[in-house]
Amino acid sequence: MAILQISDFDVSYVTKRRPPFQAVKNANLTIGEGEIVGLVGESGSGKSTLGNAAIRLLDPPGTITRGTTVFMGTDITRMTEDQLRAIRWKELATVFQSSMNSLNPVINIEKQFIDTIQAHTRQSDAEARRRAEEVLEVVNIEPTFLKFFPHELSGGMKQRVALALSLVLEPKFLLLDEPTTGLDVVVQQTILDNLKIAQRHYQFAVLMISHDLGAIMEIADRVVVMYEGELVDDQPAQQLLQSPKHPYSKMLLDSYKLLWVTPDELDPNAGTKKIGDVSGASAIVPPDRTQSVVLTVRNLNKTFSRRRGFKTTTVDAVKDVSFQLERGRITALVGQSGSGKSTIARLITGIEHPTSGSIMFGATDVATLRGKSLKEYRAHIQMVFQDPYSALNPAHTILHSLMRPLQNYKRMSAAQARARAVEMLEQVGLTPATRFMDKNPHQLSGGQRQRVVVARALAPDPEIIIADEPTSMLDVSIRAEILEVLNRLVRDTDIAMLFVTHDLLSARLLADEIMVLNQGRVVESGKAEEIIANPQDPYTKLLLSSIPNPFVELGTTAAD
Image 1 (cartoon, rainbow, N blue to C red):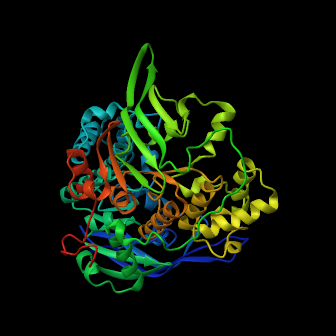
Image 2 (cartoon, rainbow, N blue to C red):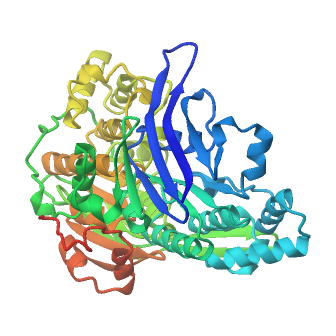
């Protein structure tokens, strides 16, 4: 029996300044009782718009222009706000993409559960607390955490609390909108495992929206593919793997398979030309071009202190880490959130200073740099950030964002900087450059924005690029493209790269060497293929086992 039936559904965004944009076109989708349906597609395909509009949570200027959503026999599109409030939480609930940050920061977890329960029932505080303990147990959280505030929980734990909160009144239907985005693979696997346990326990139906094909295949009974506002494929999960009906479905599967190919299957010589030299001097003398080693880290330690009242606690974020970065090679630093990866990146760039140990760039100890000399050093080391949506100034054009570092670091004239910006855009595959230069960031796709971020990092002709989770916010098809761009740039320009990631799969595809970081300490390091093929440390094995691979059950390999 169908619990939710979406029929002939159209959704448009209507504003006074622009023509209406139709985001969802003639969508038809049925979800049965206790069924888990995955809705997959790239960013901007209309997934979240469809899900939110179907249960009347779409914000203006989004408008349902045609169609119905029948939930348990009643058309939601015709309900009043009072009728909707009566069924929300009790009959249908939602876990949003940003639910980790949607918990009220000023009241503890217990109070948030009690408020939710008492808004819909007549339970006492004691009864509501017992109910909160029951549902937290389902998602593997101890009752003691009820007294915690959201900021005292990890990202994964906050997401599990949000999941438990959505289930506290035992709804019949749950909408999950990108519930694992931004989480490392181990935490993601934990969330998916908790969701499966909860679904078996309460037997609710699920519509899980995601751009992550691996996560969808891990949990869904049926997979629906969305492309440019249309539902183009709808099949049982295993059947979709074997025989995708639509070219876009096949492209998604092929893109995910690409992440399982070996690095030597990539063409390091394909694509772009080498960046030419640009004049500009620095007081920091980089390592000689004849030397392969660009940066040497020895016995690096970083301890943070935190004072709460009269008590001071310390956290050892980085413990005795040593490694080298070499020209034309990519070193991956892999670990969960909180393992110390980003702290190491901040130490290398001079944002943080080490407690002990050294970071040698040529003959220069980075830890001693301050002021002007630190700014000069940063011309030699550039960052590619995780989130392309916030890394670029929304008020400036792409050309402006690329010209500024050229003028600041290389002292170029406007004409020189413009010509160089064109070269950099073409270097990262945005051709013709004139098509992108005068646009603002919001006019580009996520993948195009990340290419611009990479191009901007190349502006000062750096010796080193630190790529901090550069693909974690991107769709799987775009992720593969960005990894190829980074790979070509390193091989073509002889730059050294530190690739910071929680994803061993991406590290395997891109890196020459892998360092596995756990609780601030390197527990395993070596050649990428050897680490993946024969991991020695239990933590490395855990990271590998947490990566969803839907092709294993089919007996397929990357070469298939």
